[in-house]
Image (cartoon, rainbow, N blue to C red; front, side, top):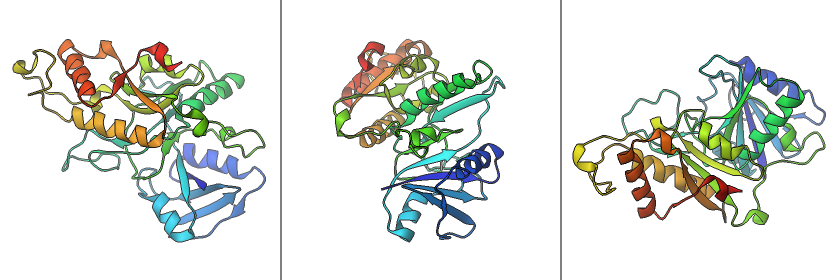
Length: 298
């Protein structure tokens, strides 16, 4: 089982962390399997470096497996991010566009109605990233936060995007961080629903030690039409939009990424109008998706 790291030369915030990682001992040149993609190996880690946009190379996990015979366990993409406030940000997030329909424009890759398996490292690595940032006096200049699920590229194995964290891989001699295993059976996993792109109310849960994080659906990933006749008895009948699809796809991907775990939805109640909250709550009930309160995740 190997871990694939992906960096692009088109983004200094992607290639510079990759170069720093390659400066550590133990790296060897890997096979030149794809046109314009270099590879490097270190223990069970494979670093791929390409010259396209970070969301433009689809199916790197499948292509690596077909070319090498190695089984890919997860993909980790190095990518830049700046918060909307222009404050420097260090972020971690899952990927996918579960709310889009066939024929919709794909602004940043993926495919309509798709969400990648969220990498179980997302929660543990966000907390590790915060510790590292604090130890280097980067806080409060840098914001360390979760981002909502968005963009591609297409993958079939657990995936996450982040600026930089390699201590959690265990390459420097320390312990790997964020591995999901049998010892986590029945552990609670967060499926975040609603709120802004940086999930502030969900972050209150994610900051706590031991919390596992699946998909994070911001309100823009829950398009809901507002016919007046739909605002009765919490019924979801007549409420158009792809919000049901988005929730179902995100839940199924999260459940698949955390075998044996218990996925609980957490709603940002203040981000919804009452008819939206009622409809979402009713749909979660129809799908047998449990709703958790903050203390349920500890």
